[in-house]
Length: 114
Image 1 (cartoon, rainbow, N blue to C red):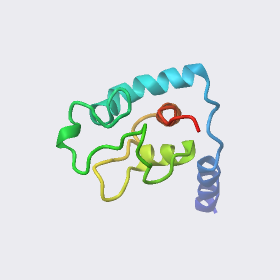
Image 2 (image 1 turned 180 degrees about the horizontal axis):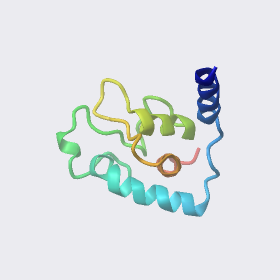
Image 3 (image 1 turned 45 degrees about the vertical axis):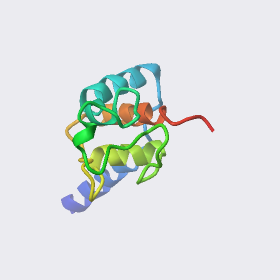
Image 4 (image 1 turned 90 degrees about the vertical axis):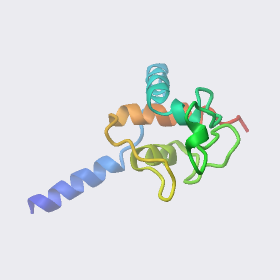
């Protein structure tokens, strides 16, 4: 019974809505991105970070390339959290959840407005 309750609570948490994209969250997302993502994806999100040349397949260009797992904030958050199979993109579950949401919003902001 305790296990079932735990599963239900964890499931509910996983389905919780993302936090609102406040200026503070976006600033945190930028800082976390620059520390953990820019080496591959570049400061401008164009896949041209200082180690990008060594990554095969190359890092995603967030400005012009399609996102493999979708470009919604939820999909980006999932990619940051769990990585992408058959790529060099590993997950970063060790980053605090709220900070991963910040990175997801920050990465999404690289996309051109439609």
